[in-house]
Image (cartoon, rainbow, N blue to C red; front, side):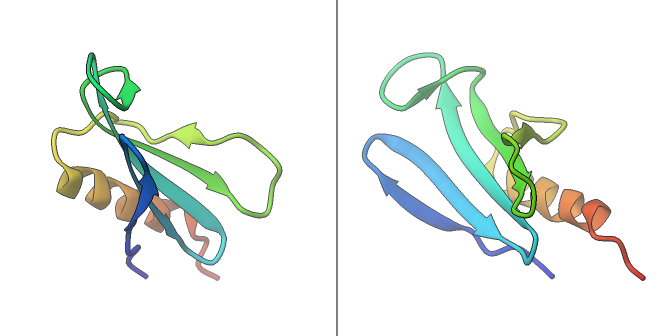
Length: 85
């Protein structure tokens, strides 16, 4: 199942969100200066399981250079999280 991201209206922040049955993924664009989130420049990916009360964790490889790379990382990571029985 591929994730489909939607942009969240959050003012100056650039944030996209997508959910599977059990996990929520967020992509945020960060920069060193200017409006929005500050951090390493690029697209940062985080996820959290919807069935546990725990904070989000960053996906390995973040930040990514492009949104497309971040989106591919989310889908690949989701594939590793889903246990096929």
